[in-house]
Length: 82
Image 1: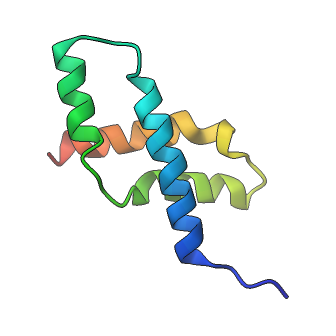
Image 2: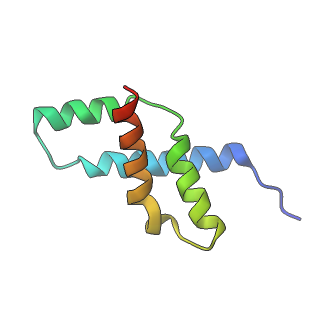
């Protein structure tokens, strides 16, 4: 029986989510977007988007299927809780 390593899973998904968040604003030079990206990329556990991805994977979905929704959850959370 394979054991599930939660710490590794969270770390891996957090890294993938950070890459996806970073890519959303990659091709812009707007000062407002740079400020948004600064706040968004300041760190965090990324629990909400990880849960979104985990829920999708649990029912057979793929990371790529839900990454935009997962990123949106993180952006909404940041907006609502600066």
